[in-house]
Image (cartoon, rainbow, N blue to C red; front, side):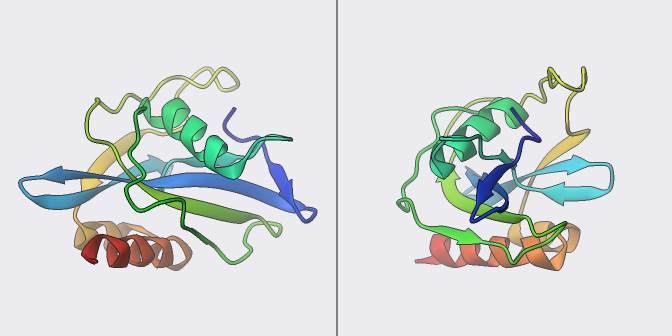
Amino acid sequence: MSGATGSKAGRPFSAGVVVVRRFDGEWRYLLLRSFQYWDFPKGGVEPGEAPLAAAVRETLEEAGLSGLAFHWGEDYIETEPYSRGKVARYYLAESPAGEVVLHPSPLLGRPEHEEFRWLSVRAARKLLVPRVRRVLDWAHDKLAV
């Protein structure tokens, strides 16, 4: 369930996926917009849930994407604490197929996000706050190897 907050050492903890897909031979990044804030699919880690499982679940719930390919392994990056000490962990995966669908959240009765875009690294950098831009840079470096 999106919006739930798991705990990592007593602080709110969420997990997500930097989802990429090739368009015309170029990697594009999936960004979701809630109000004026852009981010990758992510949400709270539920009690007893592994962070990677939470990240996969949140990507399905928020973007309707499954069948993610973790070609780069289970490496991750975590943000510095933000918003009441919350930390977000992100993994990198390719979504080779499937349409993005912004499903209504059972809690909200509407989708959590108003818009999605598949963006180049340059376009994505312009929309992200510095904390999430650091995650994008990490993923971009992994894709370049």
